[in-house]
Every structure is written in C-alpha cells, then in structure tokens.
Image (cartoon, rainbow, N blue to C red):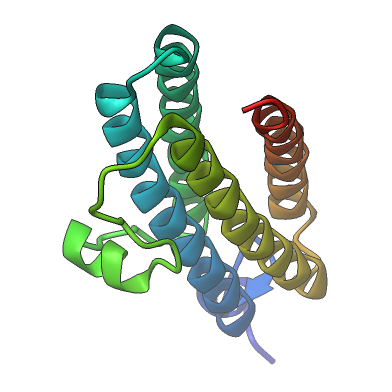
Length: 165
C-alpha cells in the first residue's frame, strides 16, 4: 500500500500527471494565442489612423492591457500545477494559431483582425474548458469561463462598431 507521500508524488492538487499535462498544454496554447494577439493590439494602438483614431487608439490600449492581465492569470494557473511557461517569443509565435500579420491595415481592417483573433481565442478557450471539465478541474474551468464571458462581450462590442464603418 502506498503512503500518502508516495501518492502525492503522482498527483498535484488531486490531478494525475496526465490530467495536469493536458490542461497545461491547452493553457500554453492559450498563452501563445494571447501573446501574439497582445502584440498585434500594441501595433494597432500605435499605428491606427483616420477619423476613428481617438476612439480606437483608446480601445486598443484597453484591449492590450486586458490581454496582459489575462496572460498573467493563465500563467499563474499553470504555476498552481507546478509548471512554468518558459517559451521564448519565437516559440510562442510558432505555437500560436494567431498570426502576426505585417501589412498596413485601415482602422476597419484592424478591428476585423481583432474579431478574427477573438474567434481563434474563443475556440482555444472552449478546448481548454473541455480539458478542465474532463479532468474535473473546476477552478480552471471557472477561470476560463470568466475569460470566455469577457471575450464574448468584447467581441459583441467590436462587432457593433463595424456596422457603420
């Protein structure tokens, strides 16, 4: 019979190594997507032009600040499992489903790009929620559900903005 110490060596917070590694993998994917998205938002904030400059300049700043907080929340959740997100920026770019993009965009194209990124992030969140549910990890599920609700609201707001542009 295993002692409690031996059992703890195979589990972290009641999750097996396999369950934890699957959750950590999808959280790493989320960090990758959010990181590339963050840098795009910074670029949009710096380079937006035209009659929507003031509104979008402020909104892009709010977005990248929110994304920065989100990345921190996800990375801290990974640390709960004893795992560090040690990827380099190059590795995160390779892992991300969101692509940087390098061409100059109009303000409308920037918002459309943000909406496209939201769709990719939304799919990543749903995948991560499913892994958390399968593992019985309600804490990670709750964190991801909060992030999903917030993302869906911001998606709606940016979508409404595109209606008359």
